[in-house]
Image (tube, rainbow, N blue to C red; front, side, top):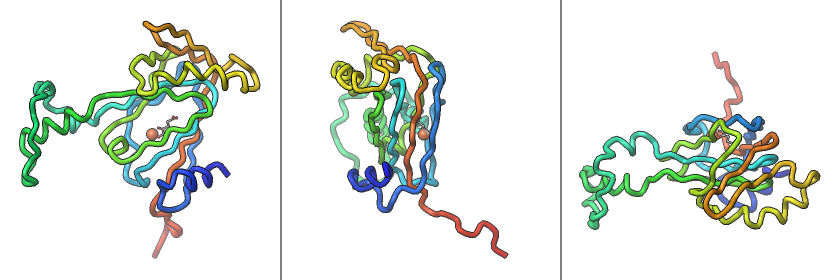
Length: 192
Ligand SMILES: O=C(O)CCC(=O)C(=O)O
Ligand SMILES: [Fe+2]
């Protein structure tokens, strides 16, 4: 089973994956920025099928509260380990910039730790996604290779990219399998 393979090959989950959410998206549908919350172990594996999408990661608002000090790049010293100082707070914010990831069909995205706890993740409600800023921007250049292996070549993927303007057109549905580990499975819901 796919979850077993993800569990074994990633080595990132303390026990077998016990929760899979299947989402289906029409070409103009996304998901609003959110956090997956404390019910899950903080590692998420998302398998993507169908049209590609861009997933945006946005620093959580608690890390974006004083944007006026955002440009404070000359901070070099580490804090003393006591109360967080202003410098430490700035440094922490400096480490949290928005980023995005292009999710191609049959790709597996795994995110964890800070990406789980310090960022919201979401997908725009748009048929066209820009991936210029995606951290894996080079990937679609090789994607045509596996595009040909799909049952309907070219149906799911349309990359309208050139070197200045990198966008994907979502021409088909996208189905994702979000695989997680629920830490405490309540066996008896009602205890008297
Ligand atoms: O469909 C996706 O890629 C993301 C789904 C998601 O973030 C969720 O179900 O919590
Ligand atoms: Fe999520």
